[in-house]
Amino acid sequence: MQRLPIDKIISKIEAEETFSAVSDDYSFTLKIDEYVPYVCGAVHDGHQFRKELWENCLHTEYERWYEEDPETKNMVISHPILIAGCDSRFEYDLNRDPENAVFETAWGKQLWKQPLPEAQKEKSLKKHSSFYKVVHALISKIEEKYGICIVYDMHSYNWKRWDREVPTWNLGTSNIDNERFGNQVEAWRQALSTIELPHNIKQTAKINDTFQGNGYFLKYITTNFKNTLVLATEIAKVYCDEYNQVIYPEVVSAVEEQLKFLLKEHALNFYNSYS
Image (cartoon, rainbow, N blue to C red; front, side):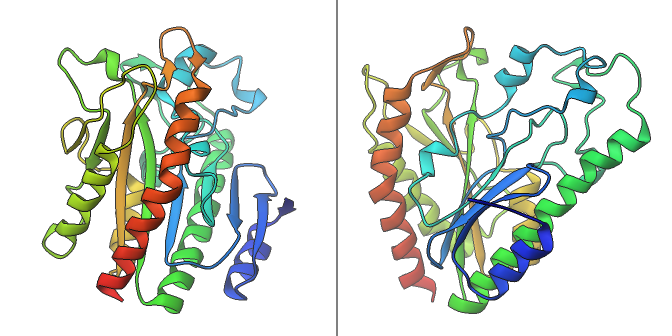
């Protein structure tokens, strides 16, 4: 893996080079092992929280972890193109638009003891902007090369906070072209419902049951690229103890192993259907 400035990352994409890199500010990673018509993203995987913010932050390290999406990068680590955030969404949220990416309150609780200085906010928003410059270059290249692209936008959610039974997998589709891509959405839902997990974890997958796919990552790509489908894919945090901050690696591994085949097969079917 190389450490590269944003312009070098974009230059490599435009030249169709394969590479693995971390941005020079360590805010996100991108690997391209091969140029294929699908991309995996894990924008909330990151947990870094820069030190100058620590003393001013009212949320604990655990409270931040609880609202992040740990291990979502590792669930798709084997796929050829993977972009993932390194920083906590509490520093800036890659899945919100720039005007709302730096929180003042988070999940009903004030985030900062004192209002965040403008210089610190701008430092965070610069990282947000850099990430989307690379996303734009990446999807542009895939559409240019293949005419079509599908993005698997991986997230997780805290299932124990719900007062009803919720699915193991949820697809959010309220901001995509369901008339055009509805068959692919249902095919992906069916594929996810077949994933077998340890400890008798239920194999359920639903559409718009817990979340509707309102994230900025999906909206940005969908707005700017008419031939790219983004599938906001949420797994309930059955792969960890969300109250005690313990990851279950055997569950993460089971997801990753089965997505090696299921995700690749779905992406190939999508390409064959729309190219």
